[in-house]
Image (cartoon, rainbow over all chains, first blue to last red; front, top):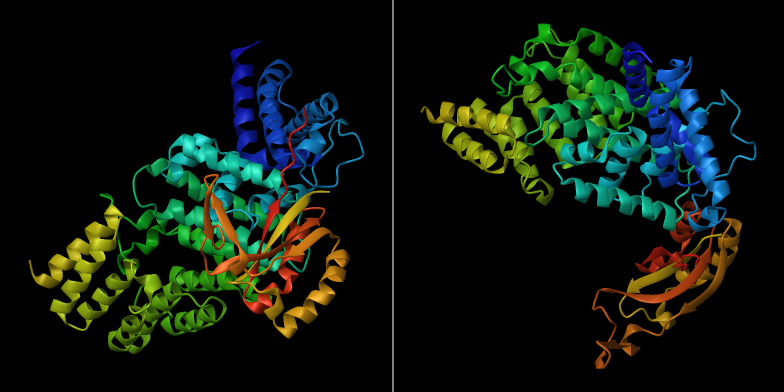
Length: 416
Length: 115
């Protein structure tokens, strides 16, 4: 065997791992009837692929090859161990047809089943996130652990516990019916969005892992849109991620310092991502029922397409925040609305709203609240109160880039 | 089919003689709803109020009251057979105890592993 063949096979396996893991695992899980068994068989299939593809060349459809191999392995285990199915049930309609026909492919529903199972509301949010990364994206447990600043054994225990619950409580491997779909889909979107924000504004350390989380979240949103092309909120989520991510490179300067939206280099924003995001937002709004992701994407779109900060359509943004508050009455949304309000009616009007929000316990440790308050006071030329608010924000902020920004503003208002 | 223990919690003391007329009426309809959703009630019991409970700890330490002091107490339980957790949760959501400020906990029954 040649080194070239080996290198080509390695590349193809790595590529198939990144692009087709969910597809292969999802199709295998339905046959295996158990996520643990499916995962094991899929891992074995990838190992087998490296050997076989080095020897015989890369197949025309690597995903189909892997699926067939993993399913065959699963069926072998099931045949050997007939009691398995009753011992570890994953309730799904098992395929009556043998799965060893070459070229037999997974239906898109398999991937949806996998996603909805990982994001089942009976699982804790952190378990949903970990399972999605591990099972849908095929990210190794060590990398999942690093992304969430946990030790590998802790993360492995979390994943195992979640898989055990799926099996013991008989969480079904199924796409929810129409009645449950909106609520269940919202959980899936929340998980993907959480993955993105964890990558986008992680509190500390590990740059590379975080960039990967952002890529994974975008990949998941894209995959979901292919699987559910008619869901406006899926469109909205992908748009929101693209429009936010288009500005990623300009959020910090060369020395890692935070750059405010108004000071960001708009020429460096990713135009292709903004265009794609903008088209998706329009598509989502055309359905007439804009949910919270589409509305947030609409806001991000107005920011991304404004010539500069002052030329931003703040009235339209304020209107979108009003709509957003109707579907998502969160104090964080209300705080962001106050910022928009300050741009339409001035900082004085917004300060009243922010002070009212300061009485909400849910925002007691939210450093953006004193940071926004400080900025409004600074703009109102009340430097003493602004300094107090910057100090309060500094006490709560954990992200180094944000702390440095707040410290600089504090120095500015105290004239030091 | 998987079996679940459904623990029904009510504000203490969870007196079955003092449930609201709405709850009582809804309870009449509940068994039919369970069947309709694809579940089967295997067995179920209501308990006397938690003021009648006695806790025994560490083998011989006897105290008046439920094992865990809380605002809500187990007021009853039933064994539910359902094809999967989604069906069990649909049935749990329909349990009328919420009309009296309560809720339920759904837990799969333990089956000793084969061998």
